[in-house]
Length: 242
Image (cartoon, rainbow, N blue to C red):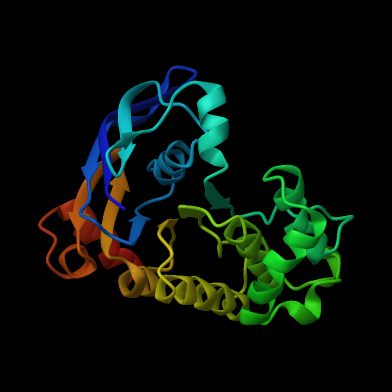
């Protein structure tokens, strides 16, 4: 995927959250967004995922501008998958039914075709044994992996992850990061917001440091972590990686 963001502005109630943010990537598989809390990472991700419309500026993936009208955005959202900090699973449905619901009611598959679609991914990611459990019966890591699988089984062009491990303990975090690493190995395109810096370094093809609503640094993980000339970025890593 090639991402081109130009002069992106997002304002809420007079507060500027993104301030003419600009970034262009090469043809990559994984873009990771890092930086301080409140810097604009999640706001940018929501725009890239088609969930919010920016106040100004433009976004294009692979040369195709992101639409701005709601009808076209609904169609766009059907082609991507988004995973949030909260799992957003329906508590009254089993894990399996949480996977089947969007396939049947949003993407128009028959119940039989939807079950065929999810069978292999459940096995691949060691979740088949938990398919008939409700979310309350699953661990946090299992719930988040089901949420990722729900986004994956619609066969999206790309996935968007908004700090998918922030609510998890270290063991469950490792489960979810392992799954995202497997998706990278399978060729899945994604944009990831994370505070897991070790994982960001391993998985990113390119990394963008977001702060004060702008891209303060952009490049390979090695360039950003080891050779960044921006003092704000160096100071941030100096504090959290010390």
